[in-house]
Image 1 (cartoon, rainbow, N blue to C red):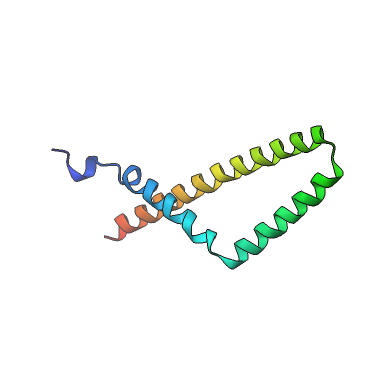
Image 2 (cartoon, rainbow, N blue to C red; image 1 turned 90 degrees about the vertical axis):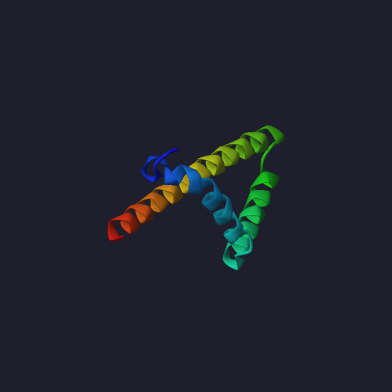
Length: 91
């Protein structure tokens, strides 16, 4: 049987925490308003572009969003690790 110190606590809890974190902003009014403005701006730009330009721009935006998602996840995980480290030092 593994000793408690052999468990990677972050490996156990991060999937649940990150899943849970995504649920918070979905119902946040500020997020919803910002998302609506983002969609309006995207539609306005799309109207000005040719189909080829619109496709390229859409792919670019998708990649930016994917990169931002990775950054947010990494920052969140590091924050959890830091918090856990502080708690362990206190206890």
